[in-house]
Image (cartoon, rainbow, N blue to C red; front, side, top):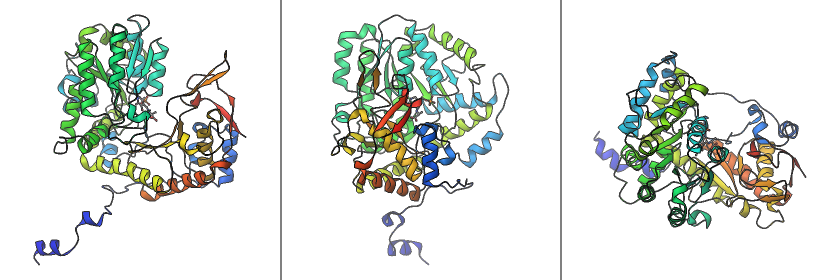
Amino acid sequence: MDSSKLLRAFPNEQSLGTGTRPYVNHAVAFKKKYTASKRIKKLAEVGWNVFFCPSEYVTGCDMLSDSGTTAMTNEQWAALHLGDEAYGSNRGYFLLAEKIRDIWGEAFFNPDARKPNAFIFHQGRPGEDALFTEIGKLGSGMQIPSNGHFDTTEANIRANRITAVNLFSRELMANEDTPFKGDIDIARLKILLEKSHKKIPLIYLTITNNTGGGQPVSMANIRETSRLAHRYNIPLFFDAGRFAENAWFIKHRENGYMGKSIRAIVREMFSHVDGCTVSFKKDGLGNMGGGIFLREGGLFMKRYPHIPDGLMNNQILSEGHPTYGGLTGRDIMALVVGLEQVVTDEYLDHRVGQVAYLGNRMTELGLPMLTPFGGHAVYLDMNKFFDDTDKKASDFGGIAFAALLLGLYGHRVSELGNFAFGSYDKKTKKETFPEVNFVRFAIPRLRYERQDLDAVADAAKALYENRRLIPNVKVMYGKELSLRHFKARFELR
Ligand code: F0G
């Protein structure tokens, strides 16, 4: 049989449009069964805060976070076994150094231990804590602008009496359909720099922009931000947790990048920055891990030559020896293998495609979604969701939506809007509300199938159709606390 004849005679795999996943299930975990009435009872017990609901009650999809929730590959499970649990200079540390140098660039991990520029931590935020503690010592009245700080990043900045400035793009704010809504607003950044550049120790770009809807940042925006920052002698950092997903969007949406490899795009992205903080619980495909990486010879190292030693002190005081940074040797091995997988097209096409699949399904069902869809999650616009009801911002409809999605249908998502990013002033008794009001459906990597995503979309639609019945939220505890969404308890009224 002539194979080319066969191939011509039948439709090809792509034209069928129903490709399979690029992986198979190798081990699976069965869930417990709980009825809606049991889940609701449990939720009432924990004050309707979905963070406090025991995860075994999440009988649908757990979309609370895409962080540390990755299903690992066989190669990663096998690598765990090779973890070297030495107190000093475990084998994985050197493999990780090689991998970072290979993927981000040689300048980001100096193998000479006498000139350290790479600092591993057990996750992203202790790294942020260390960095902003050091920066906080530089003076008072400082500001750190970003395209959108993540909540704990912002909290770590503030804890050191630095102002966190969010310069979300105009397109994001206007909900216009543009390909790179994660960009920093360059016009606002210019104004801020002209006025306050002496007070800005560092500029941040979060890739992808989690708080701003998981939206990507374009190479053009990275380049321009870097140029501006450097003109004022200010270092530029990435918050790099989802660097590979960001690179995928550059490849597929930005002129001139389609022919380039993800690895080449990642290299180019990192060529513009002086360092990064990172949570490897996202695009490290690990369940744990994070760090701070400084460009050798970069502006950050030049301007603040004493900071690396401060970072290392912090590591030693809070994480252990810098060569394990609070991670077990096996965690490090899993990261080394995860970083290799995450920059492949087969992985990323599926990953970003899965997010778009859920987003499209929800849009088809009439739900008001933030579009275009980002890299790790889809975001439901709660202002539009409740637009034709009498819900007020202070009724925290997003919190009630998340509580009911879990109670009634078994799926867990997080409110990232009026409650999470809002605040309450005890003196004036006033609530302040943020610029964006979303509920986030974060998709754990390599974990769910289409059938699962369909169930989530159908459940969200059922709540949308009954939106007038969704109760108001009364905050019983924690209204005035910082990071209140993690701590608060509610009643539904
Ligand atoms: N920066 C970004 C952009 C993040 O999304 C996160 C975590 C962190 C920093 C902190 O990293 O969790 O390792 O300490 N985001 C998770 C989320 C928690 O659900 O989006 P971490």
